[in-house]
Length: 337
Image (cartoon, rainbow, N blue to C red):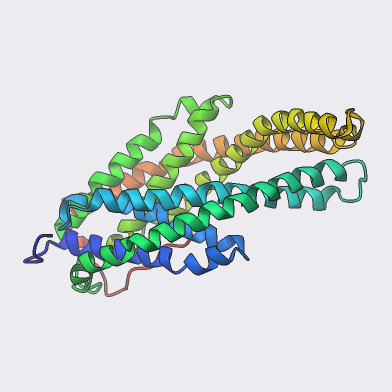
């Protein structure tokens, strides 16, 4: 590890942000282990993603050769949490749908059977989550990151005006994220481009997380763009959830029918499940169409309002007139999960 002599403002700022997200991840571990509330796994997964987004941005400035090792360990955590979180979200949507149709007796059996199978899968995945947490804690990656970055982060002073190098880095990475975000403008206008719409959700997430990193430099004036990105991320996430169901439900029905025949020797008991499963499939398709229409309308609205050009102007101004962008004594506002 290099000595911490004359650390750059970028290194100090980056170290403080990385440790903030690392601490947000670690604090959720006990709740994820207990598995009593799905919000623990959600918050930990989000913290891991924010951490993974921050690490490469400050890679060149930080005095460590272990960045690849850190990134790999954090990525493993994200992946182990992701499968479990996806099932949590799906179970939640099933419960909401069941609550809406519980008075229609012919629809209930199919939804309850689907929930049972998903609950069984989720229970199995918890073992994988615990193994991933055990590994994460056994290798001590959180402690190693802290020991490397604490000397830098301790020098961070939120009351000082940001250095010009931070504005330069902010402009570079946000511009790159924004260019990626707009690279799919044509593709996402076809509702059948499922893969592109999912990729756009990831782009929205990356742009949002990157803006959050640097929002304190602009006295948190990036909030309108952050709010819009979060809205797009949520809309595209819900569209993706519907797309997953639309693919999974026919597969589930086939497997469940085969399981029924194997157990009973005939498909008759399975027929009781069909009305609810078909109704849920219809519901997801209809919801997907509505969500997509709302997303495209909001996407075009942001373009008409020149929202993204305003963002470009916002991040360019300090480069043109740096003295007008001295930070106030307002402390950085932690991102909202």
